Image (tube, rainbow, N blue to C red; front, side, top):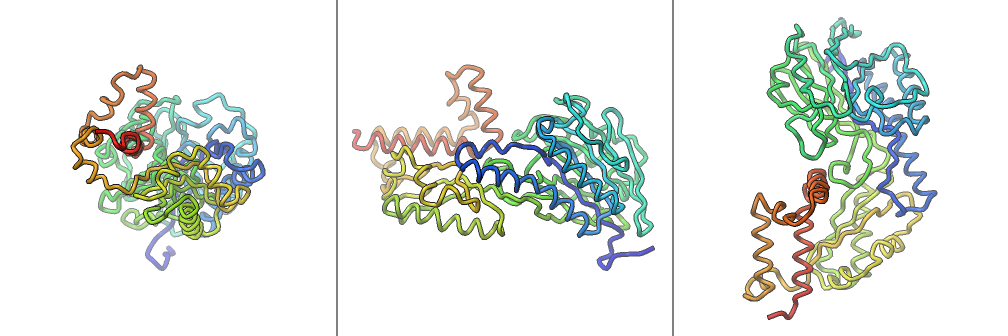
Length: 427
């Protein structure tokens, strides 16, 4: 029996939410057609980096925890790239397992363009299926999983692992699920952390939640979301490094997952502090400076950014009243540069007068700011704000706030700015 220098008996790579074929609609018209196509092509190559990672890590198992495709029935190229990549891995002796989630072909009207290699195991819907993998070290690992039976899967699939006679120290569970009912994602296959703890699984390879996390269950057991392979827009959960988790397989369980980036395009939300900037030109200087930092952190990847101006600044009025701010920022930075694309600009600045000074005025401005503070502190603040909205509007805003928890605060900040600016001089 061979053993790696760090004591591991083998290596597992865990990825999920590849969303192959995703159109990156967030680019909109904010980049030229040529640049937008280049960025989409870069993003599509994240899969190539995942394949290279598996080979470089000498991993013997790759698990893909759902949402392999996005709308892949419209992108044959995504299917062909996927099949080609998996074929390369199986030819290297890698055991590949995948489960399907709410975006995938088991639960959609799907047109198959190419068959997966015979060696690839696709977990079906219904009962948990298990397969044994013999590692080159002689260690044996069980990989078990189950796919969605319908697009809006509401069953607790984690509980279906309960009664299987698995050895947790040797078992990987592959599942697309919402642990703890994360409001930022659809309530598909909901389960609790207790459900994961009570199941005979040592490493839970999960998909569906795009924010990466690894949670220690003790005794060589983990549950983890690898996050999505490639960001798709500038929502909070889509920003920052994206990729896969490399998991050591040990004699008594599993080691701590290690993140490895695979993304080819980096989406970012960048706060640009313009506190000491006196006009638009200086504010744009600050954007350039902040963007250079993000480009350096992206290590050569194109950056697609949402810029938010913040701070108390003399440039506040110009920033707040300029109707073509996005276009001006793009012109300053060069709209045809693939290295950085500005997808959106938000203004959350304030006038140089301090908030504390306004609150001390004891006038209409201060009274309204005090009401904003009440809304901030109340759990029912959103309900009060939406009191007169129709049900469709309420549901839409509820969903938007669920996808981006910072949205409500940014709305309150913007409302506060408008109140202070619009009522300047009011008694």
